[in-house]
Length: 198
Length: 266
Image (cartoon, rainbow over all chains, first blue to last red; front, top):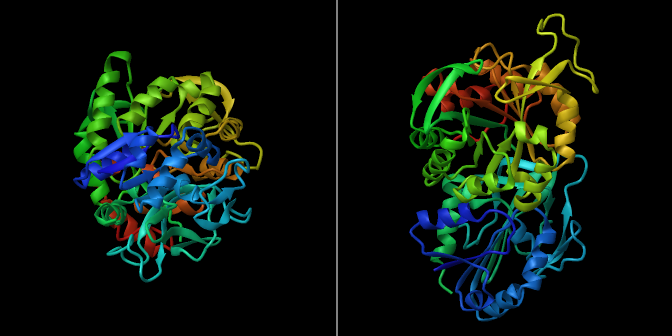
């Protein structure tokens, strides 16, 4: 069972549909107790980092942290991935999970922002989430803020400079692009996540 | 490298794909779900479904069509036509669209852009602009300057002039939270005479959000032109694909050979 966390930030239909296409059972919930008991937790997200304050205020952050301590698997998508960092200059008052020690920042002015469209990932060896995803695969991005390359980066994308396309450590995974919109490569990533045993 | 996008557009009426020349003379071109899946398999980077004769009675058909089309589509999927409110947009997103386009309703009430962007994110809101040159004699038209271009915005499926200049409206749409601009040249739409590169470049120069060029695709070199000289981030076409004039795969290979970065193989 895949638990998609609904914190009223954008559209969850595509993420749900993609997991269902892969044969997974999916529940979309805003109930912290359901999240706390879940083994596969997905936090999607589009739009503004400030929307993650809703996770804070609704008790969902605490529930997610409890589940992670119990070794649940976590996948953050787009803003959901950014939330795994310390925070974002987009919304300085909204704390992230600090699973990765860096701040999310806006693209520098020398590149057109937002970064919208299909770009490639340079995959570093050893990723569990990216198993069977060919290096230099194209994936679909749409964002104006990005994570720097950090210790847990397992795929980088170049737009001006390199940024983190995918981060991974132990039971937590984050993707800046939209795997549910990235054709075959994206579906492979979602399948890998669904098939990971806790 | 960030690639340029090739977008297949399905113009729909009552659940069927149709395509006309300069907004009239509709011909039946097939089932939207089947065509969308076919285009995606052939390498389309994105699918747009436009309900071109949206009326209240047909609204339910559109939502059903969107749901059916979205089910097995794993590339970005945009829906437009007749979206007038946050509720209309929500119904389309719930049915599985990733982005919506709004046109007339945004001109009538620009705050609608902000309202939908705040709820679903700017990346989900595309402003569709139908523009017609004021001086349609291309040869005599002045070259695009940063702050003016002689083209006017039309609404209501191209039937009503607004008196609004295309560059002013593009800038306003961006400032109100639009994530992309889909710019259709009414002069070129359906003619297969090529995109209006000057118009596209003029709009691309005044906004920082992506500009999708539409109207006039007829051959591979038209795409090369608009993605380079026209500075478009994406190019959209409809009829060229339905009638087998060009496969998207062939088109993308042509573009890549011409030095335009493409997602290929898909």
